Image (cartoon, rainbow, N blue to C red; front, top):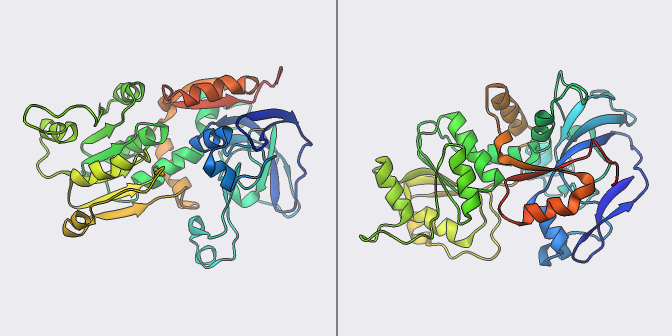
Length: 358
């Protein structure tokens, strides 16, 4: 089968590898859609993080949907032909957190496309416990848009986990980072009943996408007004906010974003932090203490409470399809990666349904 692998140097390679077998307790899936994530871009660049985390020869990719084509021995809950999305965190099942039902906190998590072969291939194998079936829909009956959205349920789950970590009904929410997950988190907060939502980013194309989705979006690096009021403080005045934001969702990983959040939160404000900083952040913990702020790290999805929440919100009208701006055939993966690296796109999808020329 065709697969996109890393060779332990900058740049991925499209190669022929043997089709995987299906061990007991696992399912084999024909990949239909896959999303390109920042993690994949790090592996493609073979940066310091990738060199420390990834073994050369690995098949990359972890966001996907597909059709089950084979079930291993002992698998009784799933069947050939079902349409599914995959939870990319494979847990041990034996550590304290797993045994307590907190599987998203497993200390031995193995990540699809990072520590184990991923989904940028014609077929992928994963434990049956990591399958999320889309009931009543098959690969043949699903629309192109449905397949696209099912292909990004992994990052959609990140957005849901982050946005719903703290109550947002009636609250004023600041989202730092207008990438695909940041935009989906803002959409989740709006769907869940937040009052004012403001999104910040330094990339104008992403700010324009946020505005097209109906959000107030601004560049926090723009100059302060003549009275010395920062852009974030100015928009609070514009919206009639008296006491700062109640909840912040840090989705960018920018070291300056958390500093800006702390400056603009109300006393008792809460921060859900998904973005991975590229370097240590100097935080004014005096203000964290005196303002009684809460900073909560977020990683992945709660398994599987987040999946139930996102499926329910999709059923009640939340449509994240607008964050998907580009779809490329798998054969044109290089163009897809170039587009994803540009910073001018929303979510970029690889389409595996036509592998001719791959």
